[in-house]
Amino acid sequence: MGSSATATRSAAAGILPVECTVTPLLDVVFSRWTTPVLWTLNEFGRQRFVELERRLGGITPKVLTQRLRQLERDGLVVRTYHPEVPPRVEYEISELGRTLGPLFAAMATWAQEHIGEVEAARRVYDEDGRPGL
Image 1 (cartoon, rainbow, N blue to C red):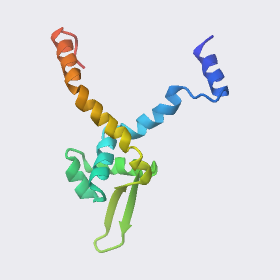
Image 2: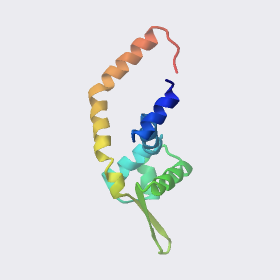
Image 3: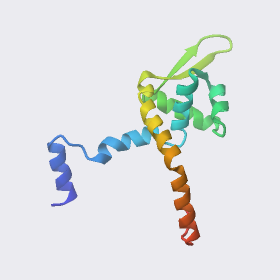
Image 4: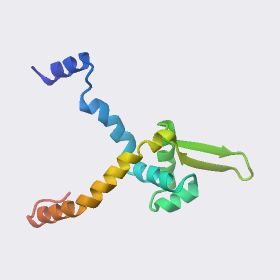
C-alpha cells in the first residue's frame, strides 16, 4: 500500500501526518529572525521598533518589519499604536507567544548540553575532507 493510501487512512482515522501538524509551526517559529524577535520580546518586554532592532543587532529594518507583521498576523506579537506627536508604536509578545517559552527553554537547554558534541562532529566531518555546505 502506497503512502497516499496510508495518508488517506490516517486522515480518516483522525491522525494527521507529522508534516501536517509540525510544518506550520516550523514555518512560523523557526524562520531566521522569528525566534530572536520572540525571545527578545519575552525577555525584555514591550519594545519600540528601534529598541528591538538595536537589541537584535544585524537585522535590517525591512526584515524586522516583515517578521513583526507576520508575528502579529500569527497572533504571537501585539502591536500598539499610540497617536502622539511623533507617533509611537510598541511591540510585545502576546499570551499565545508566551506559550512558546517552554519550547525555547528546552531548546536552550539542549544547546547548552550538546553544542560541544555538534561542534566536534562538524570538526570530524570537515577533517575527513567531506564537502562543506
